Length: 363
Image (cartoon, rainbow, N blue to C red):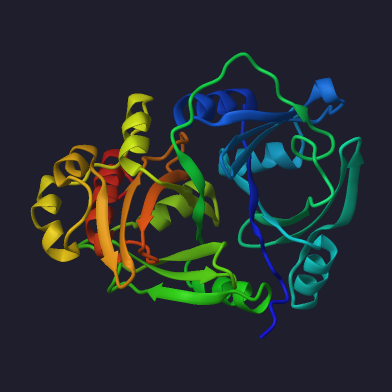
């Protein structure tokens, strides 16, 4: 079947935050992102300010409100610092809009052309779960630093990147009994297919459980796992997220690297905190996953998880939340053939998350 919504990749993720300048500094310093573009009072904006950072193919935008009453200020008040826009690269933003609207999407931004001396960008947008939106970005006729209205961000402060390459997948948390609704949305409205699903038998511990469906576009460049809570003895991480985020939203982005040992070692030096995996995990993991190229002793020291599927193995690790609220966090992942999502690590991972929830008093 012909793909009615061809997607070329993730263009950027935009976070609405309380202080964009400080958020940008944190991602420069801790995660090694490089300054790319800026918009604010100096460029003629009077209601907001945005800093754009990039590392290889990953672009993050941090936007804060300059006025009391605005969509941005209300978003931060309700959700804390969190992702608002997941922008997707397309060849034709008007066609992407028309195709998705005709299949039931709610419009967020009608197609518009933005121009400056560097050319033009065409963008459009639709609503998805919670207050999250997708923008469709056509930048084939543009060679400026980011999009019209932004200038190149010049700063003397530069940090070395940590080897992050691209966004592997982005996970959305939705409310009770909403997983199928949003999986169907991505299938019916955007033409995605379901790669895999996990129920509460796959993702559960003694205390908590969740369910998940992984949706992917036709070329596999965009993958969206959709999580919902499942009944357990105590409050799951999804319930905790929904409570503190006040609704559905992007829980985490998985950032790919070609050398997870170097990347995680550097991130730890810069103060990024990761979930703690018990020593017992490493006593038996090689019996489950078989031979690997890396030294197990090094992976154990860094608390990196390992899993295998029919195509190879993967290495992954999860940060603790990077916001004041226990909401947004990151996964660092290196794929060595594997196309799965670490099912064999679920029990150890979620028990580790439960330990953090217990410390916060939210389990």
